Amino acid sequence: MGEVLSQSEIDELLSALSSGEITPEQVPENKDKQQVKSYDFRSPKKFSKDHITTLEMVHENYARIIAGYLSAQVRLNVQVKVALVDQVTYEEFIKSISSPTILTVYKMPPLEGTLLLETSPQFVFQVLDIMFGGTGTTVYKPREFTDIEKTVIRSINEKLVENLKLAWEDILDVQPELLDIETNPALNQTMAPNEPVAIVTLTVKINEIQTYINLCIPYLAIEKIIDKLVVKYWFTGSNNDDNGAVRKIIEKRIQDVTLNMEAVLGKTQIPVKSFMDLQLGDVIRLDQSVNAPLNMYIGGKLHYKVVPGTHKKKRAVQIGEVIRKDVEEYGQ
Image (cartoon, rainbow, N blue to C red; front, side):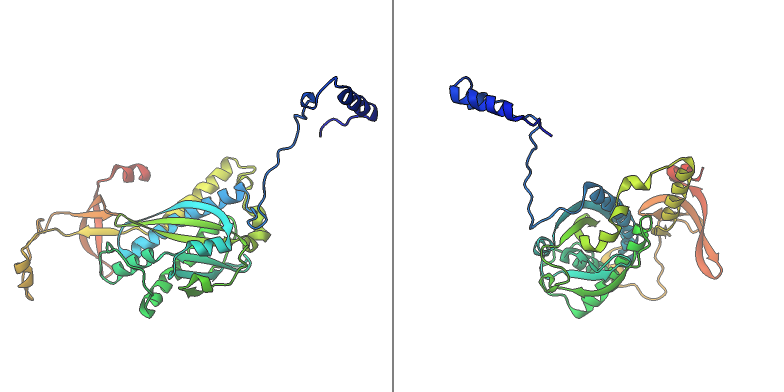
């Protein structure tokens, strides 16, 4: 707080000003003067930097989880990353997304009210194209979704919502549940226009094509548990025993990640005419001997040499050689 002048000091200062001994420009300014910052009441900032950082950490974990799930669905390598975590008003969020889109409304007790997950049309059409037998590389024009498309993407988004449970488990035991999907964001009136919300934007890359997923988290939904969204509280009193517990949690999460494993019998090339003339009983000669070990790929990379066989009446392979050095190092 600045120094308070006595009445006599004030009188002396006024007398000096009136006599011309000093000018107003010479009066020293208070160096401790508080800086004034503008504040927009139409767009209140209720999420602190700690809250935003924690939400980013939670959804980085979520990105890894759904990358495994989506990879299994489309049978391709899918990369998911957190691109941005920001706070805006609900009205700004709704105006920023395209129409039509797939807006998934869900609840996540003990969080209050409803939350939103928006899967962009480019993401939806690419995933549907691949699941329906396409390559996922087509340029998609905006159009309304068919009933079949909405039914299929609803099942995909339901799993995306369910996977939030794993992402939040270190902070809170949540129970996500899909309520509804909408294609016109303007019709969704679940929040007030000026309601502060945190927007988590995820980038999804499939076949070198990048699309987006947005999660909308209202401040009112997490207001009661906002104290838990402070990262420093997670590590208070941490020691070696706690580090061991954290290691076990990380190992458990890694074990739950889905991997694509492919054992390749062999490859060959034939003319289109020969392919069109193939009939039942024809033999296609591959570039690999029957007795040679097969190459097993994980996530599109060669990791093992394996021998094919059966186990409990199911097709199986036995690992004969480890190719990737990182696998050997992890095993040690």
